[in-house]
Length: 333
Image 1: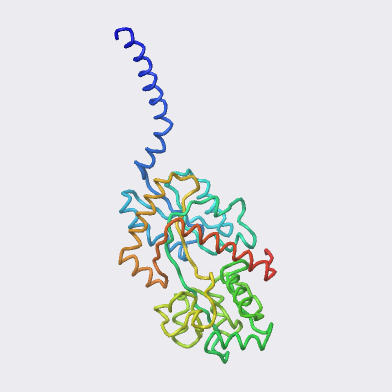
Image 2 (image 1 turned 120 degrees about the vertical axis):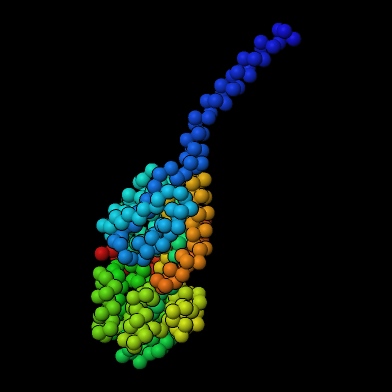
């Protein structure tokens, strides 16, 4: 026994040494997840303040900060048609301290039309959670003798190429969504791209544009006073602010992927434990009654969905828009 003891001791020390050598390799990732967040968290918004992306980021920023125990700062980095902010977020250190909110039109529509320079939303970001989902309302000028989407389709079929529709630009959700409507309904409308919602609504009210789809908040007042006519909404149910307006299914069409939605993303390769923490906290934030009320007052819905649902929606809608772009012959600007 006295001879064997020294032989076992080196083996034991070697095992301890090997285990100790493994700890530094694992410790940084474990520490990051356990200590997260260790400093303020920034949510980059790749558009100016005041839009839907900015609203969705600010909707969660303060309550998320309370849950994380660190400030959450919304930073607007507009430019490059959304490219500058998204690239900055994608290329940031993947530790959960820099996040971004992505708009569905940019994340699914633009890749199908022209791509986003040096960026693939499905590969360069890790989804955290769906934040808000906004059904669109389809509008016509009141001079058109139509009160429903079915009547508008029949009216347009009788006048191929004679009616105009507006969008926020080539490849925007309004553009692709209306092109999908054209394909589904078998109608021919002329695309007129605009730079902003205000100018678009003004031209629709003036009768220079006959059809437009947009989020409800900027147009509800004009619907109420009769200057615009709502003929359908795109949600699975009727919009609570427009309970008298039927949805697509009630109008005779299957739902289409034209709701505007916003999701929170982290850079790819962010540690799973950090993503899980963020997802858990965002879910709690979006379940709060005050947050849900603020969203609904703005015309949208605080709608949580986990990362796998966001990833599937990204893939499905991008694939759908590629088909629309091909079928409609849409070319980049």
